[in-house]
Amino acid sequence: MSNELLQQVRLLDPLSQTDRVADVLIEAGKISAIADAISNYPADTQIHDAQGWVLGPGLVDLYSHSGEPGFEERETLLSLMQSAAAGGFTRLAILPDTVPAMDTPTAITWLQEKWQTNLQQIPNSKFQIPNSLPSLYPWAALTQDIQGQKMTELAELAELEIAGFADGHPIANLLLIRRLLEYLRPLNRPIALWPCDPQLVGNGVMREGHDSIVFGLPGIPAIAETTAIAALLECVEEVGTPVHLMRLSTARGVELVRLAKQRGLPITASTTWMHLLLNTASIGSYDPSLRLNPPLGRGADQQALLQAVKDGVVDAIAIDHSPYTYEEKTVAFAEAPPGAIGLQLALPLLWQILVASGQWSALELWAALSTRPALCLSQTPASITPGQAAEMVLFNPHQSWIADSQTLKSRSMNTPWLDQAITGQVIKLWSPIASQETG
Image 1 (tube, rainbow, N blue to C red):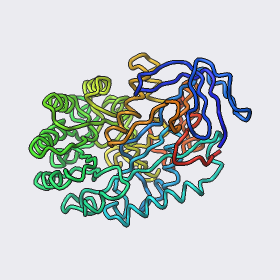
Image 2 (image 1 turned 45 degrees about the horizontal axis):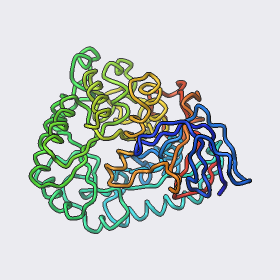
Image 3 (image 1 turned 30 degrees about the vertical axis):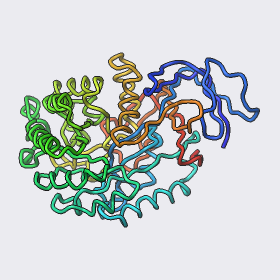
């Protein structure tokens, strides 16, 4: 493992609230020194002029989807790994909606072993610059075959190295939710629930409102989210088990979470990166990659989510990377499966639109993508501190590239930014779990 010196890099560390320009020395996979200027370093050190580049703790994704097993044509674990690394993620939590579902110890063990095999066999041609690879944390299913009917063997699953428990689908049975929270409380593992009432969703495909009428698309009312949030909050208050609320997408949902936190309920919450950057007005293009679940909010929803992430009411930004094949997505908007890829795109687009424009500080964005997601998973956040193992991402916010089949590492191309110029690119990743180079 080589030694490296990053000269005059912009160092971001949300844990210590550090935003400074410094030299950073990495020796044998550990951060050796941080100083205004470093002149004493080993003779075999690789020196990088990093002026204008950003060095921050590795990003953490709360939830995304893998195609493998079951839908390898959409995404394999290998391509998912490469997408995450190319996007700056050192920790990746994936939802259990594979085929078979991740609802037994056997299924989860198989997934983890396959991931480790890929760490050893990943081709060297995928990256131009050496990178390490992300850690995998599967969410174990709450219910058998993620059908929302019967509990899985929660105690057995809790003994595994998992992110926690989630179905990734709404669970409509409130009695089952209450029982799940009661059973899971002593196990002390993260629980993620998606507040959504499928009956109120009906046949809707976008957020109900002026734009849905203009575009002639069936609308989903905001109460499909907010009534489910209210019900979940009542369960949490009754049982006392901490819960993470996934995929917030409405201004009213933000307010419900704000009030619940003020009352001291043990909850955290997240929204997805695309709900921060886009709203229903974008759907006028009828791009099937803009059909999401939950749907994009109205302009007021988008602004409320942006402010809530800045304030910490919404704790974290999730990617919810959802790959689909060209054939699956090349259909009418209302017929397309909901979801878009994002692991490789989120950081550069969020930086360009929010940080470069001055809406957010760099530390605010990095905390929402790194430190706070780790805390939602009850994990220790990475920190760029001398003596610590290097879990970091080096990012060039000025590098331009085209998001196309040659540059995107995912097997699927379902993104509204396909074939567009993107500003900002990950240069390198350091991850404690793997020192193997991928370029």
